[in-house]
Length: 124
Image 1 (cartoon, rainbow, N blue to C red):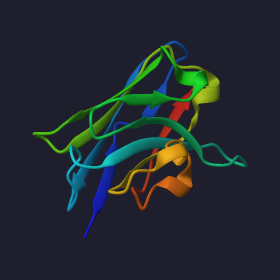
Image 2 (image 1 turned 180 degrees about the horizontal axis):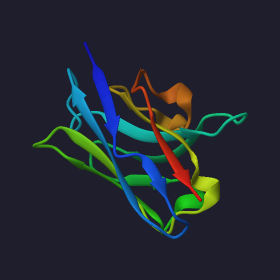
Image 3 (image 1 turned 60 degrees about the vertical axis):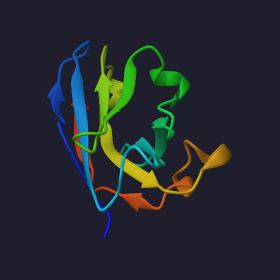
């Protein structure tokens, strides 16, 4: 049974930083495809960053040069380092995973099979 547990969310001032963590069980972060998504009230879930089996990252344009996705294979944990945070980054952030190649759906919710419960990030 795959479980993804996010942590690290909170409230931060504009320009601040946060690091989100996603601890996986029943799933190897080094052998699958993982991503971070976010959803603000009244908006669709948006893919923020993804990482493939080689460690190659993909970012949505609005977070490029501000966010960094990474993983620690020994801790079986995925991270999202968020810098220079803006009010528009406020959302619930979700960790997602799949064992199949998401292809063009790398930043689409359709590309992932397993989801965490989310962690709230508020920037003001």
